[in-house]
Image (cartoon, rainbow, N blue to C red; front, side, top):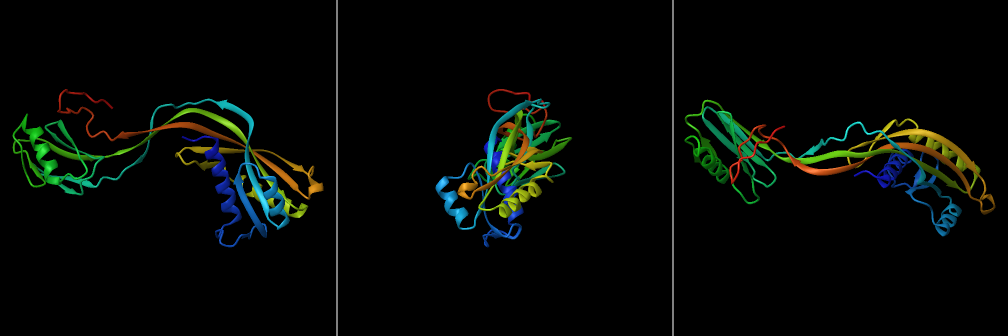
Length: 274
């Protein structure tokens, strides 16, 4: 689920990518011509004094108390990433042939005359074992046999086969707008101004940015302030504030629907509707 730490990390990543377009093997940013540390949180005073004295610049990202709840228009589960199937099923005439590699998390279905029969693959299983299990289920209603990885249904008027896997599903619990403060820390005016401009240039073109749970944050520029209150300690700051709209989400695992009206054999019949 996305929370304020995920948004902070996204802002860190965007700023670091802008400051170091060629990577960080050279600590001097080609954008501001100085070494820069970008991080979420607030700097430790002893580290700040030592690093600024050594020519480093800082950019810190900190969430402020300013927050408001936004309207959520969609709270239904939405499909996310789906695992790739390692089993295939092909139909030729009255024969279904399985191929590939058997692993858990997959379901194999054969639909005979509109009725689906489903078997779950298990780690350590075999294609011939899956075929035998499917033939056994089907033969309770119509004649069916298996030979190796093939299932034959001689009297089938219609025959179809499919393989399903599992994947993630996500839904929005709420949506909020929170203000994040990006602060440039430097030992002089010139470096402070370069860092402040870099924050603006890195984030202002972004209207939307991806978060780690697959949702999207929407950025709105808020305001900027110069702060020379610590100039006696030779610390100069600029605060650049952005409001970010983001969702707090919940994720779970689901399986793909192989048949909208499936008969699952194994104790009770369950009607699955999509």
